[in-house]
Amino acid sequence: MSVRTRILAATLTATIVGAAVAPPPAQAAVTSRGVTIPAFYTPPATLPGADGALIRTEPLPLALSLPGITGTLPGRATRIMYKSTDSTGNPVAVTGAYLEPAAAWRGAGPRPLVVLAPGTMGQGDQCSTSLALQRGLVLGVDQGQTTVSIGYEVLAMYRLLARGVAVVQTDYPGLGATDRLHTYVNRVDSGHAVLDAARAAKALPGTSLTARSAVGLYGYSQGGGAVASAAELQSSYAPDVRLKATYAGAPPADLHEVTAAIDGSELLGALGWSVNGFAQSEPGLQPLLDEYVSDAGRAALKDLSTMCVGDAIFGYAGKRSSGWTKNGQTVSQIIEAEPRLRAYIDRQLLGTRKPAGVVRVATGVNDNLVPHAQARTMAADWCRRGGDVVYAPVSLPRTGSPLINHFGPLLTDQGTAVDWLTLRLAGLPALSTCAMLR
Image (tube, rainbow, N blue to C red):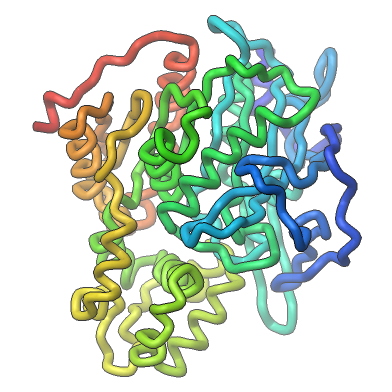
């Protein structure tokens, strides 16, 4: 059985050892919807000055692993906390995980690194991907509140590890780290967190990475938007990160269009996470929330702030945001009517800056949850700005479920995406398809 097959067939077993930079915090663990969040996730009062600086690390036992000849498969995992800068210019602690592959890197040069930006996980601290790596399936019950979180990003991670590519995964600001609310789809927060995860991984002792290790980015859906932002921000925020290639799958590039599309879908909860996160990042929006959001809306937003994606699907699928407002308008309609809201959403737009490295943009042509057209527009805008872009439309039959239309390409394109990214990290060039976007 090949290393790749053994990794992908991994079952619940052994633990993995990681490096430690600082001892675990003295604070007690906290609980979210019946799930205990380890004390590791509580940030210290004072953060380092440098972006990407490690705050603390500890060994991370993986739920899915197998014994190998010289160690465990897919490799050795370390939970990390590192410093980043949020969209307000303030320091923020971000958690995540670094995975050192057991498989050898067979490409040219030193072992490369891929930063994996997770897709939508939710807004509760228990939803973080690094916690899901340890527990696989996260379940909790607390005073009638339940939670369900599945670590669905593990397949993409293990596919990369099987090729000898090191992986660092970010939880994003506020997802995992218990000091604030997760700022869902905040362009700057997520882009910075991705780039600083690469810096943190390079600073981690005891890895096979070197200063010359090329960096790639991988993300789908929320993650696709995060890596697209990181590719745009690299030249100004993190020129030291040797970004070579990015896979941006189904990115929510234009939140005007995405907001309208998800309202009434299975993923209405994501709209609540956006509102919650924007209110935290932009305190000036709070008077608008006071003006428009009803008591029922406030209760829903508070409820959603502790939910994972599974919880939100069970609790809010098919509902509309018009049930959250005093005047019966949807969130999208209110944004269109309020210049301050429109201006804030406009600042989240992707496609306005030339991305670093080569970028593969893949989107389902029948995706009507994170609409195909707005992702294609982002790719075309990058081309017009001189970006090196490979556009890959994914054709699947359209179903009656926007959620299936959105997540179908995640699975069907994943192997191709991982292969494409690995080849770029190995030094093989990609052929731009910008001509087809004109």
